[in-house]
Length: 103
Image (tube, rainbow, N blue to C red; front, side, top):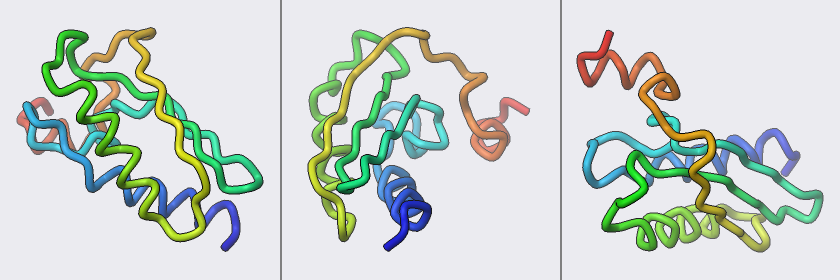
């Protein structure tokens, strides 16, 4: 599988993980800041949370790792939880903003 197709599969996997407080997937919510796909199909993801004190922070990281690990052809998955820059609603896709009544 080429890198573009593999990246599409990773993004599709990320869209299966939903924020427990906002009924939207973490990718379209704008919580994924970076996806690095190495040549050997190892993936490193920088993500954030809608709030630093999120009570399920460690669980969400595990959900992301499990979802991406399930993609055929993926090697190791590393998820970094970052808070800079802070998340805000401008990072949401227009579809999510419309769904949540923000547009």
